[in-house]
Amino acid sequence: MLVARRELIARELAEGTGATIAVGSLEGGLRRGLRIWFDDLDEKHGPVAELRPYGLKSHRVHLAFGPFAARVLATIRAAEAEDVQLARSLVRSVARIAEVIVTDQGLDDWTVADARFGITATFRHDTINPDTDEAVILTCREVLVPLMAAMAELIGYDVVEEVAGTDLPAIEGALSRSTVNRRERNPRNRLLCLRIHGRTCRICGTDPEAVYGAAGSIIEVHHLEPVSMLHEPRPYDPETDLVPLCPSCHRAVHTRRPWPYTPEELMGMTGIHHG
Image (cartoon, rainbow, N blue to C red; front, side, top):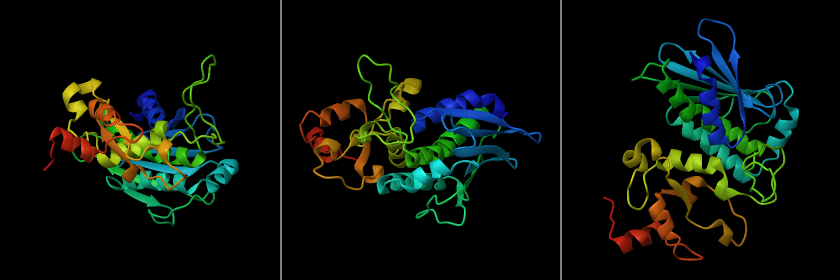
């Protein structure tokens, strides 16, 4: 039953979106579903994703906006081009493994213009029972997390630096943007980078999860062009600007400052070659 996994889903979503998530039950029918929303906005004032069983093998997620979401919709319409680009990339990443339909729009150029906006994603489980923990976690990671992360990016949930002597959380939700763009700590950038490039180190080819098992979620995300070294803002794309590196290779590339070694330079220094 999906309802029994509410805490697990909320935890997965909070980690991937950088925002606090609330999960509630969908009543009706023998196979009840779940409603997922950003906790500080509640169900009526922001985007809501509904997760339901679909047929014998699939889960279906439908994302739409609540009846009093005018303020959030206005914030989304004012989102910067970079945020829109990342949100679209996240939705396209879902379309690689699920059937995705954006209401009356295309996958590459959709916009959230008003409350009629909606996304429906159908994810089929061909090899596992969709009612198992394994299937629900997979649906969460492959569909729910990137869809809600796309909305978090458009709304402007920012990662906030901890300040000594305060009780500020490391992550907080807000409808305003921070003065400094915390690209390095944006969980949506990491999420999309790993969805596109996988969790294998670009340099040495190590898959930490294969080596360390449950303790192996230590793959790091490396900026090919350090954000601190940019002379002026430019469009930013995790697909081309970020790569996954194991902790050892990540530390090695940063032994040169201010410009780190490129992955290709380090591979040449170590004699590593990928076929």
